[in-house]
Length: 433
Image: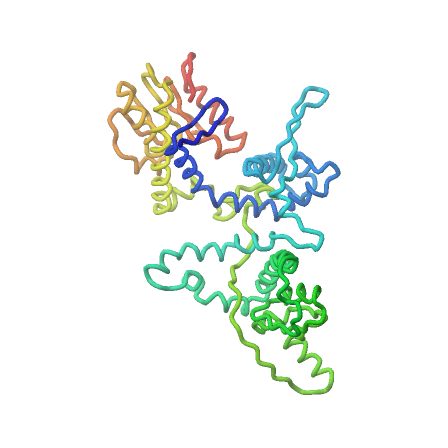
Protein backbone atom coordinates (compact mmCIF):
# COMPACT_ATOMS: atom_id res chain seq x y z
CA UNK A 1 0.00 0.00 0.00
CA UNK A 2 1.36 3.45 -0.94
CA UNK A 3 2.27 5.88 1.81
CA UNK A 4 1.34 9.55 1.50
CA UNK A 5 3.44 12.52 2.60
CA UNK A 6 1.85 15.97 2.61
CA UNK A 7 3.95 19.12 2.21
CA UNK A 8 1.66 22.17 2.16
CA UNK A 9 -0.52 21.48 -0.91
CA UNK A 10 1.77 18.83 -2.38
CA UNK A 11 0.88 15.19 -1.82
CA UNK A 12 3.52 12.58 -2.59
CA UNK A 13 2.12 9.07 -2.72
CA UNK A 14 4.85 7.26 -4.59
CA UNK A 15 6.78 4.92 -2.27
CA UNK A 16 9.90 5.18 -4.44
CA UNK A 17 9.88 8.96 -4.22
CA UNK A 18 9.36 8.93 -0.46
CA UNK A 19 12.36 6.62 -0.20
CA UNK A 20 14.38 9.02 -2.32
CA UNK A 21 13.38 11.94 -0.11
CA UNK A 22 14.62 10.03 2.91
CA UNK A 23 17.80 9.14 1.06
CA UNK A 24 18.39 12.82 0.29
CA UNK A 25 18.65 13.43 4.04
CA UNK A 26 21.50 10.95 4.44
CA UNK A 27 24.32 13.24 3.24
CA UNK A 28 23.20 15.77 5.86
CA UNK A 29 23.19 13.30 8.77
CA UNK A 30 26.42 14.71 10.19
CA UNK A 31 24.95 18.21 10.29
CA UNK A 32 22.48 17.37 13.06
CA UNK A 33 25.21 16.01 15.34
CA UNK A 34 27.40 19.07 14.74
CA UNK A 35 24.53 21.48 15.35
CA UNK A 36 23.64 19.61 18.53
CA UNK A 37 27.26 19.76 19.62
CA UNK A 38 27.37 23.53 19.14
CA UNK A 39 24.02 23.97 20.90
CA UNK A 40 25.26 21.94 23.86
CA UNK A 41 28.59 23.79 24.06
CA UNK A 42 26.63 27.06 24.08
CA UNK A 43 24.19 25.74 26.73
CA UNK A 44 21.21 26.61 24.51
CA UNK A 45 18.95 23.92 25.95
CA UNK A 46 19.93 24.74 29.54
CA UNK A 47 19.36 28.47 28.95
CA UNK A 48 15.83 27.81 27.67
CA UNK A 49 15.10 25.36 30.50
CA UNK A 50 16.19 27.86 33.17
CA UNK A 51 14.22 30.80 31.74
CA UNK A 52 11.10 32.00 33.55
CA UNK A 53 8.80 31.36 30.59
CA UNK A 54 10.81 28.35 29.34
CA UNK A 55 10.66 29.78 25.83
CA UNK A 56 13.09 32.31 24.40
CA UNK A 57 13.85 34.10 21.15
CA UNK A 58 17.23 34.00 19.43
CA UNK A 59 17.89 37.57 20.63
CA UNK A 60 17.12 36.62 24.22
CA UNK A 61 19.42 33.61 24.04
CA UNK A 62 22.20 35.63 22.36
CA UNK A 63 22.11 38.08 25.27
CA UNK A 64 22.99 35.22 27.65
CA UNK A 65 26.04 33.80 25.85
CA UNK A 66 29.55 35.37 25.81
CA UNK A 67 29.52 36.40 22.16
CA UNK A 68 31.52 39.09 20.41
CA UNK A 69 29.58 38.52 17.20
CA UNK A 70 26.98 41.26 16.46
CA UNK A 71 25.14 38.81 14.19
CA UNK A 72 25.01 36.01 16.77
CA UNK A 73 21.22 36.13 17.00
CA UNK A 74 20.91 35.62 13.21
CA UNK A 75 23.09 32.51 13.29
CA UNK A 76 21.27 31.27 16.38
CA UNK A 77 17.93 31.74 14.64
CA UNK A 78 18.99 29.37 11.86
CA UNK A 79 20.27 26.83 14.37
CA UNK A 80 17.06 27.05 16.42
CA UNK A 81 14.90 26.65 13.31
CA UNK A 82 16.90 23.61 12.27
CA UNK A 83 16.59 22.04 15.73
CA UNK A 84 12.86 22.72 15.65
CA UNK A 85 12.61 20.92 12.29
CA UNK A 86 14.29 17.92 13.94
CA UNK A 87 11.85 17.93 16.92
CA UNK A 88 14.46 19.13 19.44
CA UNK A 89 12.60 22.43 19.89
CA UNK A 90 9.11 23.80 19.41
CA UNK A 91 8.85 26.99 17.36
CA UNK A 92 6.26 29.43 18.82
CA UNK A 93 5.09 32.27 16.53
CA UNK A 94 2.97 35.05 18.02
CA UNK A 95 1.99 38.63 17.21
CA UNK A 96 2.54 41.43 19.70
CA UNK A 97 0.31 44.46 20.18
CA UNK A 98 1.96 46.29 17.27
CA UNK A 99 1.28 43.40 14.93
CA UNK A 100 4.94 42.38 14.73
CA UNK A 101 5.82 38.70 14.57
CA UNK A 102 7.66 37.28 17.59
CA UNK A 103 9.36 33.89 17.31
CA UNK A 104 10.44 31.94 20.39
CA UNK A 105 11.60 28.40 21.06
CA UNK A 106 10.80 25.93 23.83
CA UNK A 107 12.05 22.47 24.72
CA UNK A 108 10.44 19.21 23.60
CA UNK A 109 10.57 15.79 25.28
CA UNK A 110 13.51 14.99 22.99
CA UNK A 111 15.59 17.97 24.11
CA UNK A 112 14.57 17.38 27.73
CA UNK A 113 16.72 14.26 27.52
CA UNK A 114 19.71 16.59 27.02
CA UNK A 115 19.01 18.41 30.29
CA UNK A 116 20.61 17.09 33.46
CA UNK A 117 18.22 15.13 35.69
CA UNK A 118 17.87 15.63 39.45
CA UNK A 119 21.00 13.53 39.94
CA UNK A 120 22.95 15.76 37.57
CA UNK A 121 23.18 13.12 34.81
CA UNK A 122 22.43 13.35 31.10
CA UNK A 123 23.56 11.82 27.81
CA UNK A 124 25.28 15.08 26.82
CA UNK A 125 28.85 14.04 27.81
CA UNK A 126 28.46 10.86 25.73
CA UNK A 127 27.19 12.81 22.73
CA UNK A 128 30.11 15.23 22.99
CA UNK A 129 32.58 12.36 23.29
CA UNK A 130 31.24 10.55 20.26
CA UNK A 131 31.26 13.66 18.04
CA UNK A 132 34.88 14.60 18.80
CA UNK A 133 37.11 14.94 15.72
CA UNK A 134 39.57 12.16 16.56
CA UNK A 135 36.77 9.70 17.16
CA UNK A 136 35.00 10.81 14.01
CA UNK A 137 38.23 10.60 11.99
CA UNK A 138 38.54 6.92 12.86
CA UNK A 139 35.34 6.25 10.91
CA UNK A 140 37.07 7.42 7.73
CA UNK A 141 39.21 4.27 7.98
CA UNK A 142 36.32 1.82 8.22
CA UNK A 143 36.88 0.84 4.58
CA UNK A 144 40.54 0.11 5.44
CA UNK A 145 39.41 -2.22 8.20
CA UNK A 146 37.75 -4.38 5.54
CA UNK A 147 40.39 -4.10 2.82
CA UNK A 148 43.52 -4.25 4.99
CA UNK A 149 42.30 -5.83 8.22
CA UNK A 150 43.45 -3.08 10.57
CA UNK A 151 41.33 -1.50 13.31
CA UNK A 152 40.05 1.92 12.14
CA UNK A 153 41.16 3.73 15.31
CA UNK A 154 44.68 2.27 15.02
CA UNK A 155 44.82 3.30 11.38
CA UNK A 156 43.80 6.86 12.22
CA UNK A 157 45.92 7.41 15.33
CA UNK A 158 48.73 4.88 15.32
CA UNK A 159 47.71 3.12 18.51
CA UNK A 160 44.90 1.01 19.92
CA UNK A 161 42.02 2.89 21.51
CA UNK A 162 42.69 1.16 24.84
CA UNK A 163 46.11 2.84 24.99
CA UNK A 164 44.79 6.30 24.33
CA UNK A 165 43.40 7.29 27.72
CA UNK A 166 46.53 6.19 29.54
CA UNK A 167 48.54 8.70 27.49
CA UNK A 168 46.12 11.63 27.79
CA UNK A 169 44.90 12.51 31.29
CA UNK A 170 42.48 15.12 29.97
CA UNK A 171 40.81 12.60 27.71
CA UNK A 172 40.73 10.14 30.58
CA UNK A 173 38.58 12.66 32.42
CA UNK A 174 36.37 13.33 29.39
CA UNK A 175 35.71 9.65 28.83
CA UNK A 176 35.11 9.00 32.53
CA UNK A 177 32.55 11.81 32.67
CA UNK A 178 30.69 10.38 29.67
CA UNK A 179 30.64 6.88 31.16
CA UNK A 180 29.69 8.21 34.58
CA UNK A 181 26.62 9.99 33.23
CA UNK A 182 25.31 7.22 31.00
CA UNK A 183 25.95 4.60 33.68
CA UNK A 184 23.98 6.62 36.26
CA UNK A 185 21.03 6.74 33.86
CA UNK A 186 21.22 3.03 33.00
CA UNK A 187 21.81 1.75 36.53
CA UNK A 188 18.93 3.75 37.95
CA UNK A 189 16.60 1.84 35.64
CA UNK A 190 18.36 -1.52 36.18
CA UNK A 191 18.09 -1.47 39.97
CA UNK A 192 14.40 -0.52 39.62
CA UNK A 193 13.49 -3.58 37.55
CA UNK A 194 16.16 -6.21 38.38
CA UNK A 195 16.27 -8.05 41.72
CA UNK A 196 19.19 -10.37 41.03
CA UNK A 197 21.49 -8.63 43.52
CA UNK A 198 19.37 -9.64 46.51
CA UNK A 199 21.33 -11.80 48.95
CA UNK A 200 24.69 -11.17 47.21
CA UNK A 201 27.58 -10.41 49.59
CA UNK A 202 30.32 -9.34 47.22
CA UNK A 203 30.50 -8.06 43.61
CA UNK A 204 33.55 -7.67 41.38
CA UNK A 205 32.86 -5.14 38.62
CA UNK A 206 35.35 -5.91 35.83
CA UNK A 207 36.02 -2.80 33.76
CA UNK A 208 33.97 -0.78 36.22
CA UNK A 209 35.42 2.62 35.37
CA UNK A 210 34.81 5.10 38.20
CA UNK A 211 32.69 2.59 40.12
CA UNK A 212 29.30 4.14 39.31
CA UNK A 213 27.61 0.80 38.66
CA UNK A 214 28.73 -0.60 42.02
CA UNK A 215 27.77 2.59 43.83
CA UNK A 216 24.27 2.41 42.33
CA UNK A 217 23.85 -1.24 43.34
CA UNK A 218 25.20 -0.75 46.85
CA UNK A 219 22.99 2.31 47.41
CA UNK A 220 20.04 -0.12 47.21
CA UNK A 221 21.81 -3.14 48.75
CA UNK A 222 24.13 -1.62 51.40
CA UNK A 223 25.25 -5.04 52.74
CA UNK A 224 27.12 -5.78 49.50
CA UNK A 225 30.87 -5.23 49.38
CA UNK A 226 32.27 -4.22 46.00
CA UNK A 227 35.59 -4.33 44.17
CA UNK A 228 35.90 -2.01 41.19
CA UNK A 229 38.48 -3.48 38.81
CA UNK A 230 39.88 -1.51 35.86
CA UNK A 231 43.06 -0.14 34.28
CA UNK A 232 45.31 1.83 36.66
CA UNK A 233 44.88 5.14 34.80
CA UNK A 234 41.09 4.71 35.09
CA UNK A 235 40.72 3.83 38.75
CA UNK A 236 43.17 6.47 39.96
CA UNK A 237 40.40 9.01 39.29
CA UNK A 238 37.69 6.95 41.00
CA UNK A 239 36.12 8.48 44.13
CA UNK A 240 35.69 6.62 47.43
CA UNK A 241 32.27 5.00 47.93
CA UNK A 242 31.02 3.41 51.10
CA UNK A 243 31.17 -0.39 50.69
CA UNK A 244 33.60 -0.26 47.73
CA UNK A 245 37.24 -1.27 47.97
CA UNK A 246 39.79 1.49 47.55
CA UNK A 247 41.70 1.98 44.33
CA UNK A 248 45.36 1.18 43.85
CA UNK A 249 46.31 4.85 44.19
CA UNK A 250 44.26 5.22 47.36
CA UNK A 251 45.92 2.16 48.93
CA UNK A 252 49.35 3.55 48.00
CA UNK A 253 48.50 6.88 49.61
CA UNK A 254 47.39 5.14 52.80
CA UNK A 255 50.56 3.02 52.85
CA UNK A 256 52.78 6.08 52.55
CA UNK A 257 50.91 7.86 55.31
CA UNK A 258 51.44 4.82 57.54
CA UNK A 259 55.21 4.88 56.89
CA UNK A 260 55.55 2.08 54.32
CA UNK A 261 57.95 2.85 51.49
CA UNK A 262 55.98 1.09 48.74
CA UNK A 263 52.94 -1.02 48.00
CA UNK A 264 52.58 -3.27 44.94
CA UNK A 265 49.04 -3.68 43.66
CA UNK A 266 48.44 -5.40 40.30
CA UNK A 267 45.25 -4.63 38.29
CA UNK A 268 44.80 -5.43 34.63
CA UNK A 269 41.78 -5.51 32.34
CA UNK A 270 40.59 -4.12 29.04
CA UNK A 271 37.49 -1.99 28.97
CA UNK A 272 37.29 1.45 27.48
CA UNK A 273 36.89 2.50 23.90
CA UNK A 274 38.26 6.07 23.66
CA UNK A 275 37.62 8.85 21.21
CA UNK A 276 39.11 12.37 21.34
CA UNK A 277 36.89 15.31 22.21
CA UNK A 278 37.90 18.76 20.78
CA UNK A 279 36.02 21.92 20.27
CA UNK A 280 34.55 22.17 16.83
CA UNK A 281 34.52 25.50 15.16
CA UNK A 282 30.72 25.73 14.86
CA UNK A 283 30.41 27.36 18.30
CA UNK A 284 33.02 29.97 17.31
CA UNK A 285 30.84 31.03 14.39
CA UNK A 286 28.27 32.26 16.90
CA UNK A 287 30.60 33.64 19.58
CA UNK A 288 33.17 35.28 17.29
CA UNK A 289 31.22 35.74 14.07
CA UNK A 290 33.43 33.72 11.72
CA UNK A 291 32.26 31.02 9.30
CA UNK A 292 33.02 27.53 10.74
CA UNK A 293 34.76 26.26 7.58
CA UNK A 294 36.92 29.39 7.40
CA UNK A 295 37.77 29.05 11.09
CA UNK A 296 38.93 25.49 10.49
CA UNK A 297 40.80 25.97 7.20
CA UNK A 298 41.67 29.67 6.95
CA UNK A 299 39.68 30.27 3.75
CA UNK A 300 36.06 30.17 2.62
CA UNK A 301 34.84 26.77 1.39
CA UNK A 302 34.55 27.93 -2.22
CA UNK A 303 38.06 29.43 -2.11
CA UNK A 304 39.33 26.15 -0.66
CA UNK A 305 38.01 24.27 -3.69
CA UNK A 306 40.14 26.47 -5.91
CA UNK A 307 43.28 25.56 -3.95
CA UNK A 308 42.64 21.83 -3.66
CA UNK A 309 41.91 20.14 -6.99
CA UNK A 310 41.13 16.78 -5.36
CA UNK A 311 38.51 18.27 -3.07
CA UNK A 312 37.14 20.38 -5.92
CA UNK A 313 36.57 17.15 -7.82
CA UNK A 314 34.88 15.50 -4.83
CA UNK A 315 32.58 18.50 -4.37
CA UNK A 316 31.72 18.71 -8.07
CA UNK A 317 30.88 15.01 -8.24
CA UNK A 318 28.58 15.33 -5.21
CA UNK A 319 26.79 18.35 -6.70
CA UNK A 320 26.56 16.65 -10.09
CA UNK A 321 24.80 13.63 -8.66
CA UNK A 322 22.36 15.42 -6.37
CA UNK A 323 21.54 17.95 -9.10
CA UNK A 324 20.67 15.16 -11.54
CA UNK A 325 18.23 13.75 -8.99
CA UNK A 326 16.75 17.18 -8.18
CA UNK A 327 16.35 18.32 -11.77
CA UNK A 328 14.68 15.11 -12.88
CA UNK A 329 11.91 15.73 -10.38
CA UNK A 330 11.75 19.49 -11.04
CA UNK A 331 11.25 18.98 -14.76
CA UNK A 332 8.47 16.49 -14.10
CA UNK A 333 6.40 18.94 -12.06
CA UNK A 334 7.50 22.45 -13.15
CA UNK A 335 6.61 24.01 -16.51
CA UNK A 336 8.07 27.48 -16.00
CA UNK A 337 10.77 27.02 -18.61
CA UNK A 338 8.28 26.77 -21.50
CA UNK A 339 8.77 29.59 -23.99
CA UNK A 340 12.05 30.76 -22.43
CA UNK A 341 14.83 31.54 -24.90
CA UNK A 342 17.83 32.06 -22.63
CA UNK A 343 18.80 31.03 -19.08
CA UNK A 344 21.73 32.21 -16.97
CA UNK A 345 22.51 29.65 -14.25
CA UNK A 346 24.35 31.58 -11.53
CA UNK A 347 26.57 29.26 -9.52
CA UNK A 348 25.71 26.49 -11.96
CA UNK A 349 28.70 24.28 -11.19
CA UNK A 350 29.37 21.81 -13.98
CA UNK A 351 26.23 22.86 -15.86
CA UNK A 352 24.07 19.86 -14.92
CA UNK A 353 20.95 21.94 -14.19
CA UNK A 354 21.09 23.68 -17.57
CA UNK A 355 21.83 20.42 -19.37
CA UNK A 356 18.76 18.83 -17.78
CA UNK A 357 16.53 21.78 -18.71
CA UNK A 358 17.79 22.00 -22.28
CA UNK A 359 17.35 18.26 -22.77
CA UNK A 360 13.64 18.90 -22.35
CA UNK A 361 13.56 22.38 -23.92
CA UNK A 362 16.21 22.22 -26.72
CA UNK A 363 15.38 25.70 -28.05
CA UNK A 364 16.77 27.32 -24.88
CA UNK A 365 20.29 28.74 -24.93
CA UNK A 366 22.14 28.49 -21.63
CA UNK A 367 25.02 30.27 -19.92
CA UNK A 368 26.57 28.38 -17.02
CA UNK A 369 28.17 30.98 -14.72
CA UNK A 370 30.48 30.00 -11.88
CA UNK A 371 33.98 30.51 -10.48
CA UNK A 372 36.80 29.85 -12.98
CA UNK A 373 38.18 26.83 -11.08
CA UNK A 374 34.70 25.27 -11.23
CA UNK A 375 33.86 25.69 -14.89
CA UNK A 376 37.31 24.60 -16.07
CA UNK A 377 36.16 21.04 -15.29
CA UNK A 378 32.71 21.47 -16.85
CA UNK A 379 32.00 19.24 -19.85
CA UNK A 380 30.77 20.57 -23.19
CA UNK A 381 26.99 20.55 -23.65
CA UNK A 382 25.09 21.48 -26.79
CA UNK A 383 23.47 24.87 -26.34
CA UNK A 384 25.44 25.80 -23.20
CA UNK A 385 28.34 28.20 -22.82
CA UNK A 386 30.48 28.26 -19.67
CA UNK A 387 31.47 31.66 -18.30
CA UNK A 388 33.82 32.23 -15.37
CA UNK A 389 33.32 35.09 -12.94
CA UNK A 390 32.30 36.27 -9.47
CA UNK A 391 28.59 36.62 -8.74
CA UNK A 392 29.36 39.18 -6.04
CA UNK A 393 30.77 41.52 -8.69
CA UNK A 394 28.53 40.94 -11.71
CA UNK A 395 26.29 38.44 -13.47
CA UNK A 396 25.94 37.86 -17.24
CA UNK A 397 22.86 39.42 -18.82
CA UNK A 398 20.02 37.15 -19.84
CA UNK A 399 16.28 36.61 -20.07
CA UNK A 400 15.94 34.30 -17.06
CA UNK A 401 18.29 33.77 -14.12
CA UNK A 402 18.43 30.50 -12.22
CA UNK A 403 19.70 30.39 -8.62
CA UNK A 404 19.61 26.77 -7.50
CA UNK A 405 20.89 26.00 -3.98
CA UNK A 406 22.88 29.25 -3.82
CA UNK A 407 21.40 31.72 -1.35
CA UNK A 408 21.34 29.29 1.58
CA UNK A 409 25.17 29.39 1.61
CA UNK A 410 25.36 33.12 2.37
CA UNK A 411 24.20 35.60 5.00
CA UNK A 412 21.75 38.40 4.25
CA UNK A 413 24.41 40.92 3.21
CA UNK A 414 25.90 38.64 0.57
CA UNK A 415 22.48 37.45 -0.61
CA UNK A 416 21.50 41.06 -1.28
CA UNK A 417 24.69 41.55 -3.33
CA UNK A 418 23.89 38.49 -5.44
CA UNK A 419 20.27 39.48 -5.99
CA UNK A 420 21.19 43.07 -6.90
CA UNK A 421 23.63 41.81 -9.51
CA UNK A 422 20.94 39.48 -10.87
CA UNK A 423 18.50 42.38 -11.01
CA UNK A 424 20.95 44.51 -13.00
CA UNK A 425 21.53 41.64 -15.44
CA UNK A 426 17.85 41.14 -16.26
CA UNK A 427 15.67 42.98 -18.78
CA UNK A 428 12.71 45.05 -17.60
CA UNK A 429 10.32 42.09 -17.74
CA UNK A 430 12.07 39.55 -15.56
CA UNK A 431 11.85 36.03 -14.24
CA UNK A 432 14.05 34.65 -11.48
CA UNK A 433 13.80 30.96 -10.53
